[in-house]
Image (cartoon, rainbow, N blue to C red; front, side, top):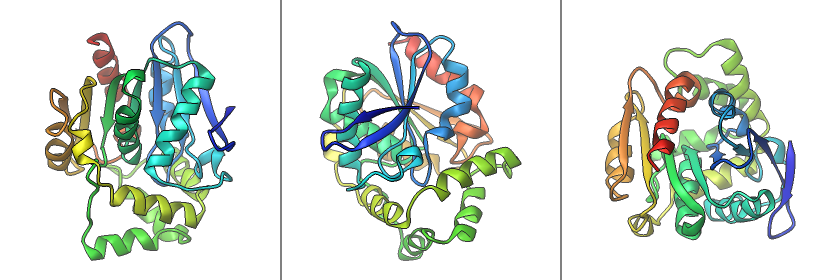
Length: 257
């Protein structure tokens, strides 16, 4: 892994694969995850494209980094990454919380972003969970048994052992305080008005087993002109369930830019 320094001097980790001189693809992971969740998709795209997958501060190989741990700071950190790795312009591809960060970054640095791919996206307006669901999320940090059971429910069908191990390893690296602070950030986001001004070409991908109506109404319909795709027989972690399909949709999107 390579490293870069953020504006506040924090060292963060990222992988950088594929040929230079091509439009760069920047992959952003979700909550309780790490850049490793992109490995199946990146392995398919890195033959033809430069692919960068970053561990956000507090996650993955960057898990020792100091906070704050919120969507705004995660977006700010990306500016340092694209300067360090000479990634401007690029396509930003985010999963779940990473898709919220991608939207924030497209607003903060519109000149740097040629395209957005938002997979199982957290809306820019947050999710405002019912009290019972909110309590469930807050109970996960520091509870590996509950976390592992929750992770298993995010794929359909039950994931193979190697995928379960990947997800559990990524989650285990996240300290409870990081998980709680970042959860509060993405679940209570409130920049839908700004997201409605995004004019970057955008592809929104949802799974039929992951409330696609939320992604359509609160993300795809908010970003004018965006394209919306539903994956069949998939759930929240479609990037691990159907990497060939995800890679193909990304390739098609890039070809149309």
